[in-house]
Amino acid sequence: MTVNLEDMSLEELKSLQKDIEKAIDTYEQRQKAEARKELEEHAKALGFKLEELVSDKSTKPKKPVPPKYQHPENPSLTWSGRGRKPKFVLEHLDNGGSLDDLLIK
Image (cartoon, rainbow, N blue to C red; front, side):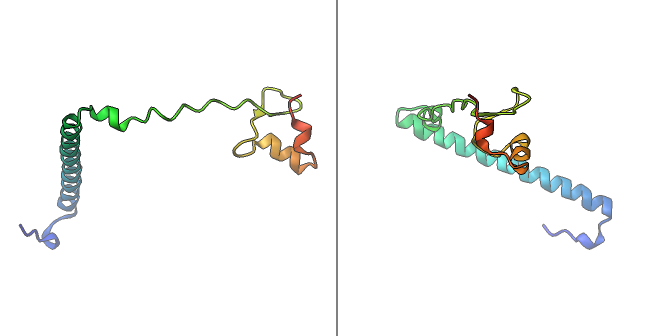
């Protein structure tokens, strides 16, 4: 099938673009469904359910880390010491303070 894009109006081109995007999406969905079906059949032949093989129950959920530092005037603002430093910590350090000043005692 050959389409002469030069002879099409802008409206026709946009409509064609939408149709192509929809066709690509449905194609990908069909491919994924077919792949899933094949994987389920293979897992069943091995005596498993696909969900058993793809779920990773060995990783434990991460426990929240207790706060290690807190704002000197507003104790509800805390930081565990991991990840990006919160604004109150950065401001304290910029003003010459140290992390030891913010330690929860």
